[in-house]
Image (cartoon, rainbow over all chains, first blue to last red; front, side, top):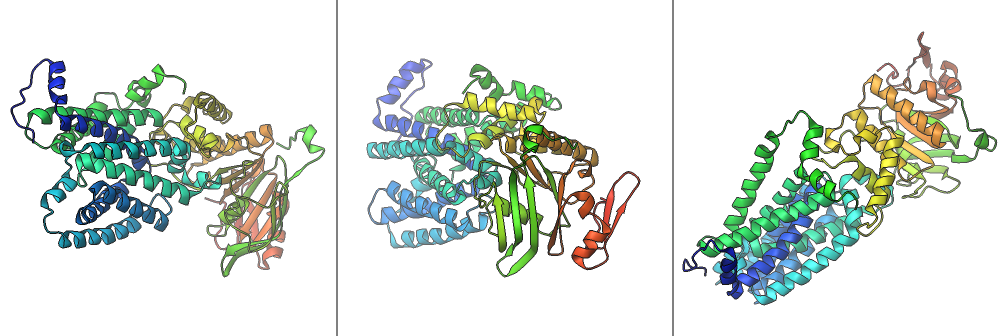
Length: 305
Length: 271
């Protein structure tokens, strides 16, 4: 739907003006921004709890839900939300401890993907729908989708705000948190629901198969760069936002999928943080490393709170 | 080391009490017949071979498990999960290698992590966490990432985590297990200092009593389904252990005062 008729101009203001003349670009930027913020925040907890497999599994479960919704002639986002939330609660109930939950996750994943296969076999004209669910189709997002995304993200923000400290503590030190009287099953369910809703809205941007690039990799980078959870979350959101915005910008001029640009950018950033960034610094003097890292830099700017 | 605060030693209030206590799992008693009474400010070691049920006693006190028989009280009440008067260091070896969160954040979460909401007073919470780190001599580690610490440093952070809520009871499960002799002694001295200066009652689980012996007020010896409690020099003798277990047990002392207990499952004390 984006053609090469749009010519890049060094004047970025006029570029953006031209871009936002198109409603689909407006919607794409709105949804992309919301999703990047939510994925960056929730992704940090996913990484901290070592639940990357859960987020991956939930996105695949979402595919089955979306296929079911398409079969019934409904908006795929509702199928996504229903299936991921159901699957997430199931995972939390079957495996109440954060670690060693892989078997329970895989069991539910296989069962619900089986339903997905059934739905696809029952539906005849699905090919393009399935493609956009698998790989994301942010340029095709509707005004309704943007509103659903916004509402879902506000729910996530409220839930993260309420459970921020218990969730962090239970993720870092489950044994002490349990002895302090916190309910691990309850926190497990809250966490899985957060991931389920975040995955559902992220699928619109990067699709089921590429969910890692927004939900896991930016947060994994942020964790390396900051020693304080709050700063790590800020960095994680900034990385996800930078990747989404710049990819949308490029995709306006180049006829390739937005998801491809996002995944490539995130991967390049990951390689940089993983290999180039630390090697530029004397690794043997850890103190030095931590004081020049971005996390520390942010902390100095905001010493309190 | 026999120093007791005169203000409190006049009326030593009972902190922990067990009567004819038995613990185990459904259908299986692991040990029984434990009787003890610990007062404020006592340093107690729980020793015994692996698998004897030492951690079980900690879980009873935390309210994470119910006794199979008998009664147990914590500050004159039945144990309950989430008792803020208890500071707890669970048995564990290392933090996740990727966890580069700074120490003060972990200690801060131990203080406020059980509260809902995002926590608007993070400056105040961090200050309280820094005070706890100072109390264990770990101020210089406050901004170090957890995964950069040595085993001994980590145990000090965990101790600060347990102390940050200003508890009256400390339960430390195998804090010495991954430390060399020198680090183990340093940590025991630190726990002793905390016990004496803050007048808390500390129960420390270990399988080797020797680093602890100079500092202990009481000992709980758990082995072969039974538990013996008392002052170390009374409990840890050939006569008293042989009488308790009905088999010949020998307690051997070397010239430096180290002891080894021979004749029960494995002989420990010489590791």
